[in-house]
Amino acid sequence: MVRERMIPIVNTPMYISTIKSQLTRLLEADKRGIEANIRDIHRSVYANIPSILHVGEFIWADY
Figure 1 (spheres, rainbow, N blue to C red):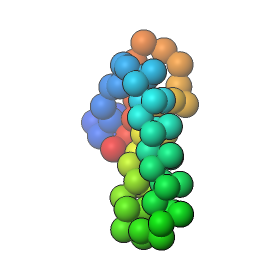
Figure 2 (tube, helix red, strand yellow; figure 1 turned 30 degrees about the vertical axis):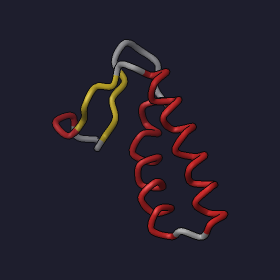
Figure 3 (cartoon, rainbow, N blue to C red; figure 1 turned 90 degrees about the horizontal axis):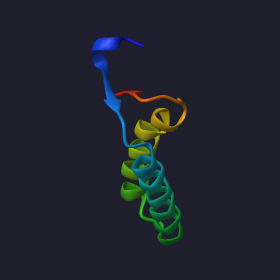
Figure 4 (tube, one colour; figure 1 turned 180 degrees about the vertical axis):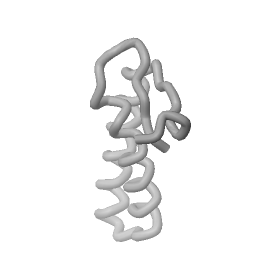
């Protein structure tokens, strides 16, 4: 990963909550068969996952 492309994320509980809600929306969209929403939420969830994979004061996510 290139450090210049990364941003610090310090509010980990909020990001975990965000990912949970996005996964819930993904499942609901899947049930309704809304493919565009699934793609958007899928991208959003995977953009946020790096933020919960590290422990420390600053959590770096590559966007």
